[in-house]
Structure formats: C-alpha cells, structure tokens
Image (cartoon, rainbow over all chains, first blue to last red; front, side, top):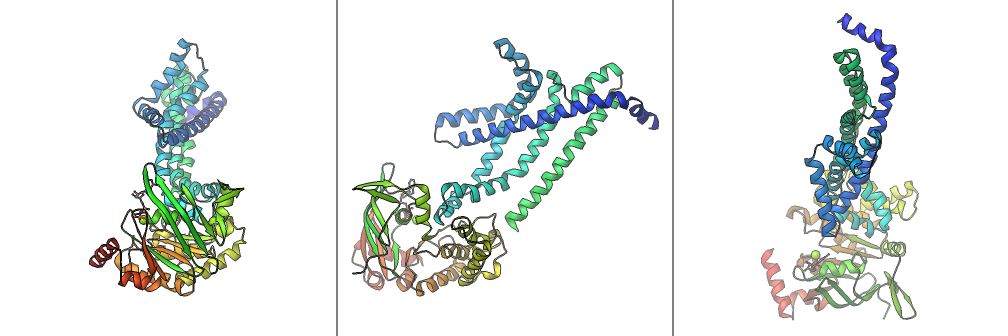
Length: 224
Length: 257
Ligand SMILES: Nc1ncnc2c1ncn2[C@@H]1O[C@H](COP(=O)(O)OP(=O)(O)O)[C@@H](O)[C@H]1O
Ligand SMILES: [Mg+2]
C-alpha cells in the first residue's frame, strides 16, 4: 500500500502541471457543452410545444435521435465525419458541440416536463390580479419552472462532466486523455486511472451535494 | 338611472368556427350581485372571461365604471389596448376560478400580497398587513405561513378569494367557485361569498348552486344557446321560470342535489 502510494509522490512534480491544465480543459468543456445543451434544450422544448406540426415533429425527432444514438457516435460524426464535408472543428469545440447535442435532447425533456407541470390557470390567475404577461412570467411562471427544473438540471451537469471523458477519444486535451497518454508511456495505468477517477469524483461530488440540497429546498417550498 | 358599474354590450366570441357568445347585453349596477346559470358548455365561463379580457371578444364592448375596458377608441375606431394598460384595468376586477390556481411556490400570505407589491408598488410591510386583513375576512389568517399544497380545497379557494379582495376590486367575478370542491367543503366557501355579498360588493357569479344563487343574488341570468334566454329578480326566475329550457334546466339541477 505504502509502496503503491509512493509512486504518486515520486511522479507528482511531473504529473501535476499537465493534470491541472487538463482539469481546466475538462471544466471548460463541461461548462461550454452545458450552456449549449441548455440553449438547445430550451429551444427544442418550446418547439415541441409549438403550434406548428412540422416543428413539433422535427424537435421530437431530435429528442429521439439523442436518446438512441450514443454520445460517442455523435462526437465521432462531428470530429471525424464532418471534415469530409469541409466542416472542421478542433477537438475541443467538436467535443463541446457533440456533448451539447447529445445532452440537449434530455434537457429538452426536463424543460418540457417542467413547463407542462405548470397549469395555464396559474398564469391566468397572475393576469387576473393585474400582472402584465412579462410580470406573470417573471414572478410566477419562471420561479415555478425553476423550482421544478433546477434539481434535474444540476444532475445533467454532472452527467456532462462524466461524459466529457469521451472527448479523449477525439483527442481533446482533457483529463481522460491526460491519463491515457501518460499511462501508455509510464506503464502505470492503475495509478493514473485511479487518480483521474478521484479527480472526477472530487469535481462531481460538490455538484451533487448542491443538487441534493437544492432538491430538498425546492420540495420544502412546494409542499411544506 | 345611475350609471351601471358594468356594461356588456353586444358581446360576441367564437373559438374557430364555434360561435359561443352570440351577442350578450348585460348591465350590472353598483353593489349588484348577479348569478349566471345555464347548462354546461353554454358559454358562462367564456362570458365571464371576456369581461376581464382573459378572452378577447370578437365583437362588442365592455365598460367598467363608464370606462371602456380592454380597448381604446380613437374617433370611432376601436383598437386593442397595450398589455400594460390592460393589466392596470384588470387589477380593478377580482377573479376567482374553479381551480383556485394559487401559486404553489408562495405561502398563503405572499399569494395574497405579491400583486400589491409587484403590480401596485406597495411597500412590503403594508402589503403584508393588507394580506392579513383580507385573510381575516375569509377566516384564513391562521394559515398565513402555510403553502397552498397543505390546505384543503375549501381553504385554498378562500385564500384565492382573499387574493382577489386584496386588489380592492370594483367587481368580483366567480367562475363556479365550489364546483371543484368535495361536498363537505362547499359550505365554507359559500359562507365566505355570502359574507362578501352582504357587504354590498358587486359580483358576477357563475354557479350550479341554485339555492345559493336564489338567496344571494339580486338577479339571475339564464344563458342558453349563446345568449341570454331569461333574466330577472333571483326569486322570480328560480321559483317561477317562464322559458321551457330554464324550467327543464332547473328541474335537472333540483334532481341532482
Ligand atoms: N379556449 C377555447 N378554445 C376552444 N373552445 C373553447 C375554449 N374555451 C371554451 N370553449 C368552448 O366554448 C364553449 C363554451 O365554454 P364555456 O364558456 O367554458 O362554457 P360553460 O362555462 O358555460 O360551461 C364550450 O363548447 C367549450 O368547449
Ligand atoms: Mg365554465
């Protein structure tokens, strides 16, 4: 055990700097993909509730696509497939787009269930007391939607963080690629994959603690 | 004759090809209480919702306190008001819905106070005091910190009534306020409405509680086929209906209760 751990001590000075920069890439990847997925998700959720049958069908098709097609396939399509059509993204942005598209469908479903859980009557009640449509959105619909949607949205962030490791396979210089590259040159795979496993856990644990607490608070607000 | 509080003039409303209201004319004096009755689907809710422009009429005009409601008139052209102006007018009419529609993220007091704070710019402490006064009126002040989900349907509806009262409305609209309630909870809500009626508040009440309408309303209006089929003093209409459709409607209602 001591022997196993001492390997980290010996290599820390060479491992630490590239690991830190890889962590930043992982976080940037996660954050950008999450923003993209939120934007796609919101638009698709609205599209699925629109009056246009065509728009509804397209959005439903998109949701089914992201449900059925593995994120890795989407990443490969973007990074390896699209250049054949003259569309080239570097590994980082291919990762952002692939993860964003892959998760957008799930986020759309979360938005949709959140918006559907709000009864139109609650909006009418807001209009009836003299709120403008904007005020009814700002003070009634939005807080209600956030309460319903926030906990699952925080869970989505954790899923994206973990899925970002797939981007190692399209050579985005993130945490998993750091471990993979170093493992192949140092022959210390156990040490390196354990290390990044712990880092992923350390990054996601605070997020899931926050998600848990938000969920508890929202439920208290709704049903206390 | 004094100017009516509410004047509904030649009101028409269609949904697609379905013509629901085919020209309603109705006046309501200050302090007057009218009950709107009629078979399900005859357009009672639509009529009520047109009064505060939750539904936009296809034709006709609403006047509240002599003022054109929801529309602007320039020359002899009518056009729709801006949302902001409409909201300001809507604030002068209180509405109570069949489904209560309290806002689940706010506690009882905030449900009653929020519009006064956000819409009328009232100070929070003042709005809270007002909310507590209104909650006292509906005997719900002991639940001011509760969230709506924890209340019975009857209690929720009384809070919804307090929310409407906090607007200090010129007119109260009730759309079947007890239809969604378990039978044993109907009484408490009717009592609350009765107390408000006794204060001389103007109200328009859609209800299937015929006995209650007879007791509380000054006037009963029977709607049928998209128009007003018969109207008059509550007791006359209910005890001595002339229109055969009203007779059979009242017969059915009696049987049901
Ligand atoms: N938003 C709407 N869209 C389409 N049809 C509607 C809408 N609201 C009401 N209707 C129809 O208008 C008719 C009158 O409805 P309503 O005013 O709710 O009747 P009541 O309240 O007397 O039961 C019904 O046939 C109903 O289906
Ligand atoms: Mg109705």
